[in-house]
Amino acid sequence: MPANASRALLCWYAVDKRRLPWRAEDGAAPDPYRVWLSEVMLQQTTVAAVKPYFEAFTSRWPTVAALAAAEDGEVMAAWAGLGYYARARNLLACARIVASEHGGRFPDDEAALRKLPGIGAYTAAAIAAIAFGKRAVAVDGNVERVVSRLHAVKTPLPAARSEIRALADAMTPDEGAGDFAQAMMDLGSGICTTRKPDCGRCPVRAWCAAFAEGDPARYPLKAPKAARPKKEGTAYWLERDGEVLLVRRPAKGLLGGMLALPTDAPADGPWRDGGAVDHVFTHFALTMRLKCARGDGGEGIDRYDGLWWPVERIDEAGLPTLFAKLARRGVAWREAA
Ligand code: SF4
Image (cartoon, rainbow, N blue to C red):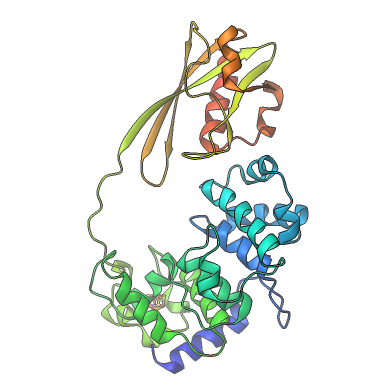
């Protein structure tokens, strides 16, 4: 994209940029804590889903020091529903390192940012550019799509990644890299969308090779995908006196550190079928069957290190989405029983 195309994009951004809670008002200095928090929340998650979480986190923990001092369980519960829970654990680990080793200030260059937990190449570049105005090239799925269309990149993804990165680098201006990164994000999410790019409203249409070819939605080209493996599992709804048994999952592994229903039988039963729930994770699809019983679980229950949670308040337990869906099945089972 020639320099005048980059300028056209920046002019469009100056007028039409999205007002987002983590963006600094015109003329104000960006707050690195808010930039970092939003970028971590936005990993694999939409702007609409992130907004209420961002507002809740920043009201409760307005600074990185406040977040660093929070209890693990509180942060995990506040994150519940946003998914990809390793992000929440890394968020807390990162906040604590910034508070204890960097005097509460985020480092301002990509290399130092990348050493922090949960900050990969994209997030480091986005923070360096947006929060600190450094020339950095942040390439996520949106930017990949825009760049592959602007240049009609003929190599399919994922092999095209290095080519796209080099093209994105060549387009990035020396001044205003933060605005440029955000302009590309806005263009990708609002106009140059996956299925129906709105080329009529696009500020860089005049320089777009895919538009000139006539079928921009075919980009980025993709190599055929392997099918997502399917897995199965079982969760247990054990209820006594209006309370259900919950356990804290081990810190490492799937949904680590989150409160959940047990996934191995906490008692002998008899167990009744409570139905099944389908849930798709990044690398596999899971069908989880729910088994339900009433009773105190007998002596073996002690090894669970679990807690009895009032069924009436199950929505407040901060269960991750999979287990929240299973809990709704458990509630339906008790109402039908
Ligand atoms: Fe995307 Fe169309 Fe703009 Fe090209 S002209 S960048 S395909 S919105």
